[in-house]
Amino acid sequence: MPSTVDVATALPLQVAPSAVPMDLRLDHQFSLPVAEPALREQQLQQELLALKQKQQIQRQILIAEFQRQHEQLSRQHEAQLHEHIKQQQEMLAMKHQQELLEHQRKLERHRQEQELEKQHREQ
Picture 1: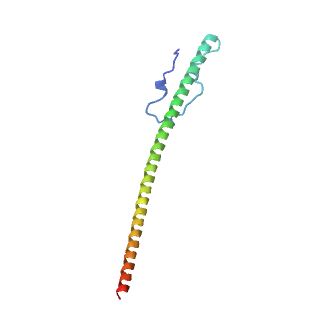
Picture 2 (picture 1 turned 90 degrees about the vertical axis):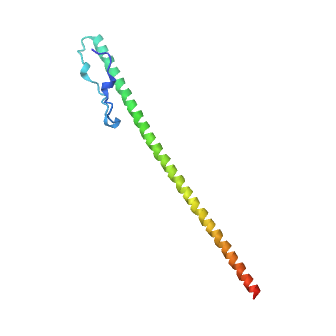
Picture 3 (picture 1 turned 180 degrees about the vertical axis):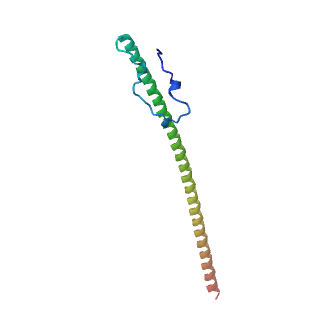
């Protein structure tokens, strides 16, 4: 009777974490008659070890999935920030252009007014 469970065979390497449901029910592959208490104790210890290993695998899958989602959200957030900064810069450039045009209009109006005053004085 094996004393350990091979974790490598418990989970295929290429399977997506969300596609691997964890069955935490007790496997009855170790079932022995209850007649021998020492063997029953050993069987229970092996089942407990198998459960702990399954839980550890499940924990690792959850952590890996959390990290994957966290990285994806971080990339999305960074892209949104870059887009926001780009839009802010474009808005500032347009505002600056608008202010510059307004300033040029005022200068032109002022020049025209001075030209009109000069013409009135000369008449």
